[in-house]
Length: 421
Image (cartoon, rainbow, N blue to C red):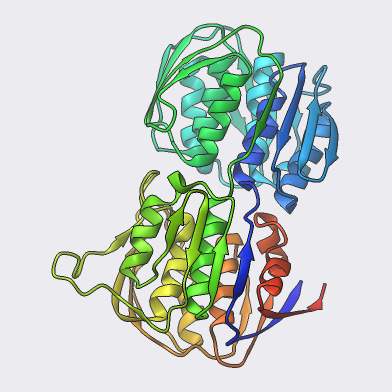
């Protein structure tokens, strides 16, 4: 999809975030752990959730959707295979390994990406007692006996945490998980497993004690609002000198985000589940001695999320002062900054993990291609605060995770044309 963005229009109005798309992926997989009905509320209609539901249907799930409510029922799993046709479209489909192993004890996964991406996941599964054999893009999993009651993840991986938690909830024994991820979507998953009959201590922390049950029941749960979408829309509103009221948020998921944004001159006011963004005539980087030269660093939750590093970099281009962005979790999240420098931003890429941003810069029209979901939304934000028109290709990638975000922005006053569906 190609869009043309006409910059310089302030955003005004009330915004309602969608449910967390990453939570939808995990909870969909967890629904297959039981042969009972599971009902999910506040489910976003995105490309990633559509692909996940398609995979669930192939596995044997009956799916009934009405607006943002989805009913899933899996009386039996029809297959133990996750074919490449599904996994190449949505890496999140590897989450279905948990229900397949829990109910069938044998799974087969085809992948088209490097095996190293699953190193933490495979190590954790082996620690639980799963026999893993990989050859030529095909991984076979076989369970004879569950061996370990304690697992330590090599990395604080969201997907690996979800896999271990789902399996542990189904084992009928106690499992301790160390170095677990604790992001809001993981918390949603753990609360759902509790609703299905598991007992879990430590939700929201990096240490989980899970007492599983032999038979998980059905559940009816709601997804948390997408905190990344909330923060991104607030950032775009600030950069365009707009005024926004964002309703239906979870303030517990915004604490550190609001503090980091304040360092860039963005003031957000929380009142219950509502976030208010006043008009900002100018953004100024905090100049106090205590925070001077202290970088903005990403970290596992509850640290500052890596999913916001691209948008934060764009905000820094509009704030007067110098900001050092340090991406500590991923190797390639800052490699998009050449697109911003092409628009007129002053950015020094120190290395793949650090970028020095000198602002403010008047961004100008440019042709852009969307490399991935999070960067795509950040580039859309850059286009909306730029001078002139910006053409963005592959904009459909943004809708993979964010529900109808382009049309939502248009309702707030953004000038965006879809010139090639």
